[in-house]
Length: 292
Image (cartoon, rainbow, N blue to C red; front, side, top):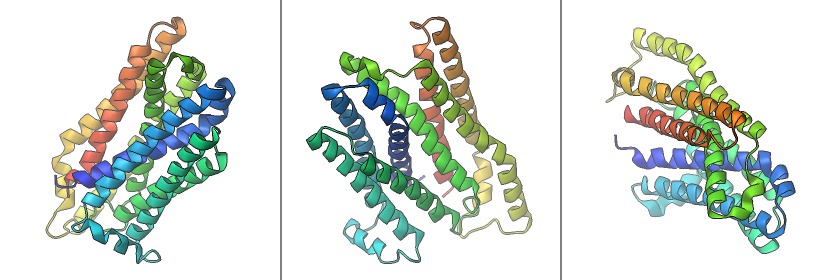
């Protein structure tokens, strides 16, 4: 597999966008429960991590270019090329996220306008990323399953990453205790991860039917790669990825039930469930690229 730079770019960028979306959904609550210095400090660290993910992802995409200094040339076909549009949306998202961070740093308050614009740019960026592969000559990508996989990954990484990041910040600074996720919030995160996985699983028979139809009509070879045959050869890896994702959902749910019975128990299961979800998403993204 020689597409590690693109794998890291899409995975980390979608993780960053997912974290930003989750912050947008929870920012009202966080600004209410956190006050003054604690509020700005917590949000700064959160945005800093989101910026780091996006920055590393952006650097990974640049290293994929044969001549990185020619990267500006990718902007020349914005009206006809999804690649150019993706570059624009990625740069816009990263810039707006950075401006949100800087505004909070200097003004000591969060700009909802900048954060909202960053979220919109991020969601458009995911669509542009998926469209690059959807409208290509690789038959395993030329299906709406690509959109489901990219947006599903964004939601799962955002929900699982939000829980892990909040708890990591709590461990480093006890004054952030008010930002601890409530039981209701944990169930919402569990629902996001579970529904994201469920929708993609439900669509898989439709996707498999598409692959069978393409293969039956002798459309399965994109020189020099028989992408459908390559896809079928990694069935064990794909099944393992889905099983780890399902296991993560069940472990997460079990941990939440334990927390309901005793607030001091179950956290380790929630952490394990979120980690399983992250591993499953990385494996699914690897499966996406390994056929190339």
